[in-house]
Image (cartoon, rainbow, N blue to C red; front, side):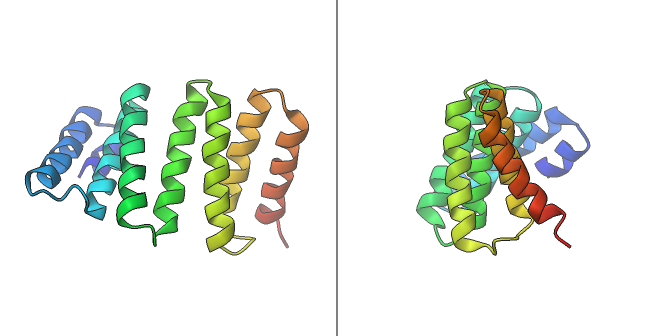
Length: 154
């Protein structure tokens, strides 16, 4: 429900449903359930869209920790968690941390996805964005070219 309300930009309802989801997992002692990681991620997404970056970062990290401990066999969710954390760091202008998270995401993706998977476009573009923000233009260009090669492959 929280994601649906987020899509409607009804942030107060989205936060309430996300917090309720987390409360339910905790009430039934399911903190180590994959759904709890998803619930934390959903709350973090809403908080991120409300520009509550500090709390969003905490929830994204909690989601990542749950996913690493509970479902390490699901690399897509783990990679997405690293991407979400990187976006908060980027917005906070903590570019070194953003790049570290994006490199973790990229490592997972290169181990689990084909080399031309469209998901890599997002990672390469996000790396380019953070590198450019640091003034590392040549490095940023390298990742932009990698993204373009996948996106515009004939």
